[in-house]
Length: 408
Image (cartoon, rainbow, N blue to C red):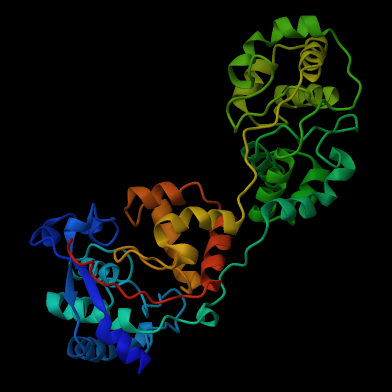
């Protein structure tokens, strides 16, 4: 009786901007937020309408989205309890080929032959259903705390590089103060043999790309300090010789490019050996080879003395947000705990993880085109995405009944 009562009270608020809906850019239909309430008006979905929507859903949609609107297939979204206007706009976009994804499947191609009234009934039917339970969400890539994962993976590094990446071993570089992008590239060079060091090659050989990203992030977040190792040479002479290095490595040895290492506070012996390796092509880099080739040992030692005596700075890297902190940003549009209270914005609570992950990655790559969502998704790391989709899949999904406000 409760569901029947809810059904009778359901108002499926749908976009009715006349022909503008059919004429606007296809990619914008299902993925843009409407400008204001004037673009919406209530369409009363009767029990008969919903019954027709149910019949259509059972014959055309149930194989993928489940007989009750709860998907049993990885990557296919739950539709039960979803917001009606959003559903209508997505269906309309699929109908005219403007939605990315599985529009070429026979079931989706059937939408081309449906009337607007049929799409309304489908949207109203799915909106009238009880949302999926949290247990219906399937596992995707598990979430890990990137910094803690980096701390764990870096345990094998601290014997040489120091517990916080500040070297106390002559000839071993500081890792604190280096940007993650540079550290990851260096590890990959050791793994591929582009940088020749048998010890480092063996250390990084078992590491995955995710491991390298975590290690690099961990060290980048540590407090930068000068290496606790001895230095030789004439720093004043080194400063004069460093004029040609400042364009890439910064006037004070702090690089403004995350792909270029900062040299401030670096271990003296490591800097000397690096210059020698570039000069002899042991390290393959034509630019550095050209710069190092004319340098003698004394000049290299002086350069290293100058840079090792400078104060390093931590790179511009922020502590990653937790899934709960990321969700606070998403909830501004998608509602508390992902339960949207806006008819044209989808609910996320209880949604399948694989579908949410694919959607976020599609916004990152531009396969789904929406400026707001692209801006939100672009800076997210793989760990961020894994965390946020796991968070929303665990939230209790709640149906929302939309009712018109009487005119004053």
